[in-house]
Image (cartoon, rainbow, N blue to C red; front, side, top):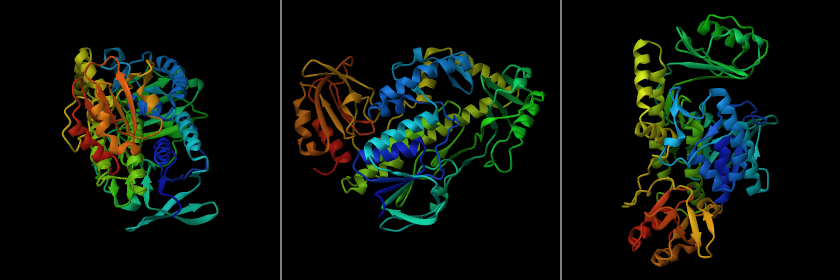
Length: 496
């Protein structure tokens, strides 16, 4: 075997998954079709959950360095720091239930460089093979073998497991035979980066009788609701963009040079399962949808965080029974929820007086604080809760844990993320609940334990945090429920 896990795709999802696998003791190998990393800006940020996940791996300072510039760019481009639902820019960070849980504005190429450096720091050896395109795949009871095309010819590589993180047109998904049901697109977006002098002749951004125009410094984009290109895989040319601008605005603008051409639709599809045998999917390989709301990258990164420790435990023989099955069980509903809300956004972007009336009503509703919080929860993913295989009644159980502030025995204050760098499960227990630490004693070789008092939360004294940041068990003040804690330890950790 050439690795414990082959990861196909060296985008942000593949790189983070490989890092999580390595941190948890597995040996990953990443295969990437492209010879060099992409340089064109695509996604411009990650959500609160992905930001917290990367902080737990010691990348908080690096993210903060990008955030300040990102806020300035967003305010310049949109005139607002508010989020949007279907281009209605009213989701106010100050109105949210947990305003401190925020995302990070970072362009995708910068994020890829950050994650590539993180992976290298963990492996200390080359673990990404570029110009390696998967062209065939077979699996049996012992592992997966792929045939890859390289500049030097074909070669075969094998591993016990393989994960496709190779995007919306995933070769892995097709070769492994995953069903990919969904809905056809209703719109197509074309975007280029250009400083063409004729752009000042275009009308103000917004709806036109035949589509929608979007502009920002150095960027122009159109939305059209028909005329989809026959081959959506072809590069977007200056001629195609010029023709689209003319159809949408009626203005003919010469585009002598364009960069960063992107063409995408709002087609929404999701793999019926994220696992077939020893082949799994994560990120856009598992789900595609409209980029409205900026949810795609956050969704994919959280796939990687959920899968990494589970797959590493499985491949190294440390997993409790059924652990790997919880990946699809937990992440598929989250992906389905994102497809659901992006379809709703697509509907609100369709042309016509009836939809315009609905947009006006949704815009008015967003002025209500509770509605604003509802949309904020939905787009951030902070409202998601996993079903746990045992009774857990605390409000945080099954949810992503916020970055708690903890007072240790020495009187110092630390954040939860500062205690999670090992990538192991973490039990934080109050000094008043030593019974929690006693219940976890048989598993001490597989988790970290910290005695600390949680600040600013009267409802939380102790918690078991999974490697992906999910609260597996939590207790308020008073005696700890060690029966449920023991059930949680048995569900997620190696047998005691």
